[in-house]
Image (tube, rainbow, N blue to C red):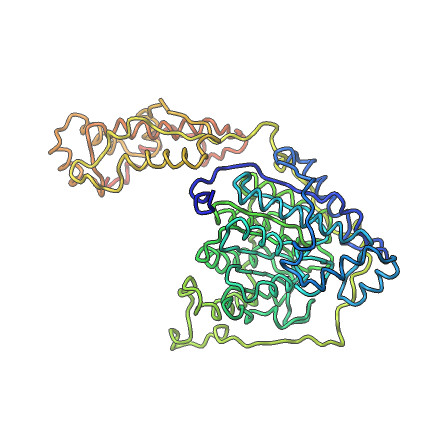
Length: 572
């Protein structure tokens, strides 16, 4: 089936979670307590099991092997050859080889482990693109986003998300969005796709005007792609530490989502670096696990839900595990918990956002609502006239990451609400049959017509969503007392009179007594059933009594309406 056909026939499917189980064979022999270790994966797996999230997913641990030709889709042949040959060397020779690169360690089995990770992301991508699954999470290591086409870098041997993109291209995707949430800039991914308009790369990373690793001018907002890829690279450099959910979600809603929506990707990949979380020993940011999961939730709205999350960094193992659990929970269809929005975003974050918009606005009209100097004749707004600053001093180069004792780091615990229920959560779809008795007597093509609900049900059936829900035809009819909990007796009496009116009288009544309303003799009957359906659905929610909040003590519906009617005007 062609990709275009699959787009129109997409079905809901399982959430995939993939592990490359050989990952414990990749370790740092020089620094045994290095934070990029197998314990990262183990803690994530334990969190998914403890909260019963993993049992709701389709777990994959075995994949078809990839060969060197697959690696050469994103990496130079010479690089692949050098990396593959390391498996024949002694550990001492491997350590010497790693010293040629920035922050790399390997063992004789590391290339096999890295290949297994790529096999995982390609397999998950293939299944999602074929419609066998809706989304997935590749819980793999080593990470990949710092590796470019010519060399490994920053704990990354090969670029996992670039390989996932190639698999998506193979399956017919023409536009791929890669969102990098790691606290370090993914310069490897940026370089691989810098001149490729098929990929929109979007990174939010700590920068501090180049002081923070990887100390590159290309990590700044003004690097937006080249050649045919001009405008398809977007960096939000964070120039202060301590950025919170407010900073990150401001970027999500004001920059990322408008840009991504206009790009309209066929597939979305998230480079999930959890070192941007609060408590990470390397990151210095204050993003919460719940705040992180909001990115996954909103990015799911793109590409008809085809989304793959790929693990990158994250060196507070317990905090990373909590965030991973919350992300998988969202992938399964649950809404994220509220983010922490206690303070506004930093001024430096706003500056970075507007700086990026100012250099992208000539390529994407989604940023036309941002003011420019030409539209602000009475005021100077320096952030729309970007000033490039690069403050990195090579003499103050960051020290290599050493041992980190996990027990010394801050942590958080799961609450009861984080646990998945033993049974599948149910979604009810209520409808009130007979709603076609309420229509506009004068205008056949009025947009608020019975065909609306029929078309919604038809789309839900065709998309496969309805079969995942419990379909209910509500028989409940709202009583006068229930209606008067909200509406006045005067309004209800007016509607009761319409049940015996002729068509001409109904049209006159609608125009004289109401605003933007049409009526038939069955309108009140249909409205009672609509309210009844809502009340019946509310009863199914089983809201605990201890969560109820009563203001000024109990009052009957009659008392509530009597109070309001004292101030009532002639308007309905």
